[in-house]
Length: 355
Image 1 (cartoon, rainbow, N blue to C red):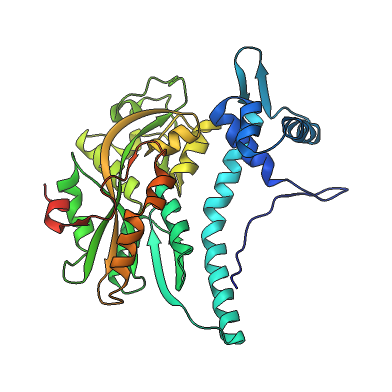
Image 2 (cartoon, helix red, strand yellow):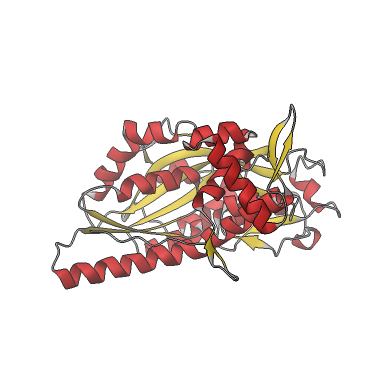
């Protein structure tokens, strides 16, 4: 028996009414496919139902959610983009707490009902789309009770080093500023205590609106007065990378409008740009494509799982087996900007962090 908790949107008024999950799924699919018909087909919904769902909520909001143009397909209206941006913000801020609370509930029920205690694996991990897919597969593993919370790369490593978790997920650049960043990461890692497993390599870069209307093609362009930037939170790997890229270009944080406006995931940053609330942000290619944004690649990075060696000798082989499995590869093969060819490879500390 396992209990999970989820968010529910409810419109309050004379008559309380839930906003269906299908509406959010449909808006996401239309943004990606630019077609209401294709979006409904992909989701397994009838076109009549999808049309009625959208029109029904447009009547409630008294504003359009979609813009339909003959010969150009469908796109989200300003309201549609805002709705998805707020949905992403709600998930990013609430989901970690819900997962943590669900874990407490399941542990309490297991103790009360006298159920067998599965082997526990506590994990703090930086946000990533392929990472989420891997965690989902990991949580399906029989006999393994997995607790996962989203944290920035450096926070995740700090918690691993202090013994508060068995696994930390972090990302680290493979070129450019890796020598400058290495000390920040190595301080929490010890080759005698930890094993490093490659989950994937991925592209990190600048996300802008689809037309790149502010002509942002490099870090220096973010200092333009008209550009509104949206940042990642302190302690995140992306924030650390961005600060060092600014340093390389000799750009002060005071010159970046929006430097102090931060979000907790790549998707949240992309959602802010898609909604028109910001012009640019640093993030992964997969998030940019999911939100129909322009992407300017800046660097390649490795997403790595650091695993504590002294907790269970079974953890490393089990994680490697899942990373190398066809099930994992098939599930993430179409995610833009990610390469899982060498997933499961044990990384040498000096090779990863060398300048």
